[in-house]
Length: 263
Image (cartoon, helix red, strand yellow):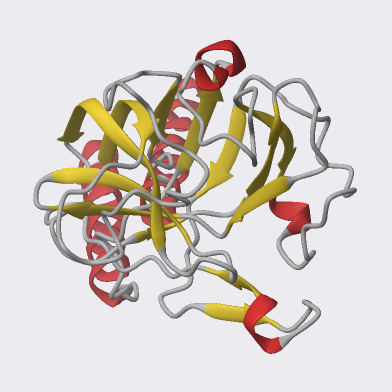
């Protein structure tokens, strides 16, 4: 009789779990790309790129990195970033599906934005991956007071080539970096993994996105001159609440059955 009761109770737990899974709300963005992007920059290699004289005559280097706490901060020549030029910069993938504008610049065109994420992990040829964060460039030897900030990034694939697109106000949406040696895959949970080496953006189509960004300033004699790396790691898949409920319920039933047998 006790075994029958236990089997009935377990069957009841399974039924409750099934009902919970059916009734649990399904999200429209279940396959939306998510996670964190880590970017590393080798300043010595970056400075080795051929630079148009007059603006960054000694080569350009990454001077400051700004994390998500600076999303609504207009980047100037003197902002203090998140620990300076850190070797492993975090750019979290944005969850918003529409671009958010923050009115905080000196003019309407200078506003910061939180770029949207509209890319499905199963179709990376459509949409974009919005990233949060910003960086600032300077002359490698500090010989000039010139600087350039690159803010509000997104990742796009154009003609099969991954591009890091900068959306700062002064230059519009242009490719800052191009990924070479890129590798992408989708894991068993349907989440996108992406990695690649960074070069200056090179032309991959006739539009602004895909054309070398800031072409007046940066020009590499070798279009595949590598000076950094990018890695997209997806978010961990949370265990559904129904599973936890089932596990705790089953353990409780087994414990009750054991106590009855001992008695």
